[in-house]
Length: 77
Image 1 (cartoon, rainbow, N blue to C red):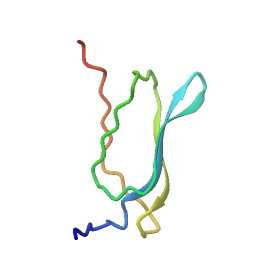
Image 2: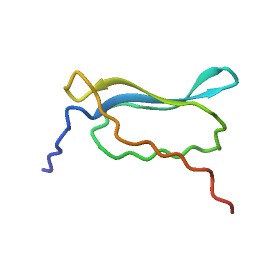
Image 3: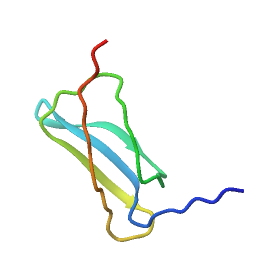
Image 4: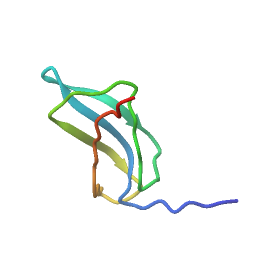
């Protein structure tokens, strides 16, 4: 049996949103996360000037911590 350490400040439930055409659009929603490093790839490119992560729950701590967000343009084929 393998046990996983759940960092209390890790975002357990969260969603990623982008500002598209004057409104926030949900790109992804995650429930039950315990990983400190997550990668999200979207089926289609997203053109936006604003991106946000809305944390709805942590793994126990009253505050959450996000240390880095990276965004990349799609690779040319």
